[in-house]
Image (cartoon, rainbow, N blue to C red; front, side, top):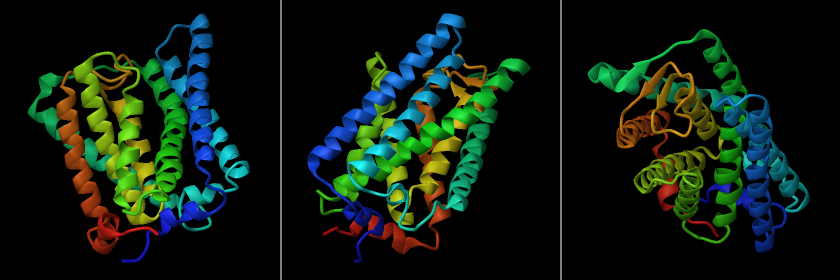
Amino acid sequence: MSQLSFLDNAREGKNNWWMYLITFIAVFLVMMLGTILPVEILNKFNNNLLNSIVGLGVGFALSLISLYLLARFLHHKKLISLINTGKQVRWSQIFKGGILWAVLASSLTIIYMLLNPSAFKFSFNFYPFLILVIISCLCFPIQAFFEELFFRGYLMQGFGLVFKRALIPVIITSILFGVMHASSLTNLNQTLLVITSTSIMGLLYGIVTLADNGIELAAGSHIANNLLMAIFFNSGDATFSSLPSLFVSSTETVVDLIIFIIAAVLFVLILFWNRKADLRKVLYSRTD
């Protein structure tokens, strides 16, 4: 089997282990401080849950900038090498991943809604909803793109330098992705479910990234998923459960997980139905 070109991008620039440690710590601190401080400042003027989304947008925007600076001037890597194996971003892949995921996830959720209407509560208040849409469309794409760039780009390529089997970096970064999303939860059962669901999400995005030699499909899907959850189908157990979303679900997180797994399988089958060799290389390829 041939090598996975996307993981080969890691060989560009400098790759000392301490550079990855410094970058990981620095980006994490910037993300935490950049998210918390804006929320604290905004809450002094108006204690609104939408402030948390603004904080996410600011924090992840600063994290994106810090990752770029560290990759460029510490690792001497070009940002595009963390995105794909070409010379420019494939915007068409971002839109393809986003549209396909939106159609699949929405369709499955609507089917479940029709089967179990009592699990959903409809709510519409024009002005708060409009603000939610605007803020979400500004902030969640930044968050999702950064997470794909950091986990599926920077970290997965870094682990690809250590492990010979290409699937191992996917698994490791998926677990890290899951743990990061559960760091603020206190309920053990909810924490385990969130870690499981987001780790499976990370596994999907990692496989798609390696099969497509770039993070764009994963980024598009990730952006669409976050926008759907915030604007249209908000889970009552979610971090932003009190947002003025169109529908608030009282379903258990395990139901959301089942819906996600079905959507993920369909997502991969549709995207790679005539590209089975690209999927096989993720499972069987080795790196030097």
